[in-house]
Image (cartoon, rainbow, N blue to C red; front, side, top):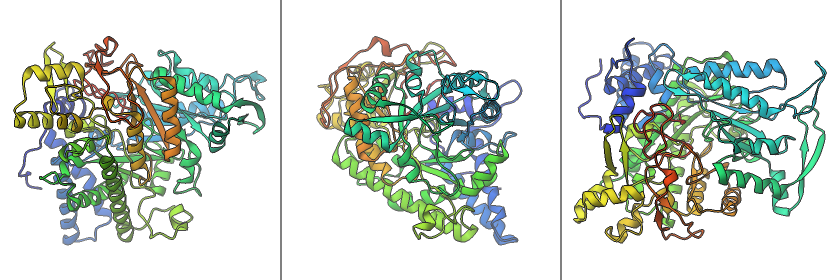
Length: 634
């Protein structure tokens, strides 16, 4: 048996609350029957057990497996590497389903549609999120030859999936999360774009438009483009591309949706085109997947891997964590219990993994680098390139040890003449909604969301929480006070506060301090190197215009992003803020803070599960309750 770790796991109070409510094993009465440390031991043991099939028989092989289990446990105990929530919840338990994300096909017949509903129910019951493309469905009004009836169109069937999800609690710990996608050249695209104009509709779905290169060329040239019936391929009519593009921006300005994915760009990077074509992503957009494909995620807290003097990353430690993370996720593929045989087959065929980072904003703070600066972009680019190179090297080493992924022959990588890899993809940047709470760090590559905020807990207590690095700096500089923290909690931002030194104002930038162009440039800096995609929200203050949002979509295309999600403050009823946010939009590229203002519509939004006003954590495409751990993220 492995010895107890010689160091304490640095759980925050928030992390322990979320662990107790969401992750720990329970007895029939609902009482937790394991400690957080026992949870991590359970996960390390179950995942490391996969090593047995690859280690040579005998004493040395067993010792090697124990050594790897100890390495997994070390990384988990230090909260430097954490897998996606289903792995933490289900490893070593009856469900045994460890994947975060799945994409399911939706065919153009009633049996195929309801097969997908059934599959989604099975998956969501085990804690996974599901993505669907509805682009194969014939448009509303089209004739159904078998019944002589009239098709109701894809949006009506998305409502069916949404209703089914309402009835499901994923593994008893979260509601279903879905992505619904429709191609921009589908005849029902205008209805789809407007589907979430009514906030009561499709509440269990994120929706995105699959935008083609042809469409974007028409936007650029001011021309029109064809809508085609997916059943026959025939052109139905033509639309003016710029008007459709403007409508997407208008609805995204109003409600945050639809998002956009650049589907041809995604398929140009498809590692296994000989297996199939990408149609959809997972619910948060960082994983374009083939039909029936699943993916396992883990993230490294790079904020914990900054050198003590703040001069940069400890590259040697980071490399070790990347290599370990690739091995861990490859072992997860074998430890997993898949909900469908089709999923198991293609997942084993491609062995895709998505290793990413979290705590990036914390790392920049430790380095005293403002998020909205050229230096931060350079750091992000260097970090993404390093993680990708180390992950690829680790996958090549695993291929020498275990063999390449079965669909290697004919893959994009083989055609490029690369060394065989164990995994068709190795990296992805997830929003890390709940696991970043467990790690006590900032989410994904998002900037800090708040420096100080008020959290109201179940007993009605009002707690002011402050970013620990800000407290440390304020106390060291002699300008800390409880009154200042209360004032910051009312605003969310420190920029423009005379009591806070100018250097601290620059370093402790929050999401609404940062002009959208900086958000986009950071997303692009990571996307240049990452195999899969990047989940990143482009935050806009409430006063932003439709034209500002459309400009962000234009810039995302120009910068080479695979997709884009925008969020304008106050545009959703479930906004998770208990503080003000800037009311004026900085000029594009402007690094100066906007003037904060209090927003009544940003206050008092309640968690849909525990009913407590939600403290701030709108991380990437996530909304996370800091009281009970409710999250739309995985």
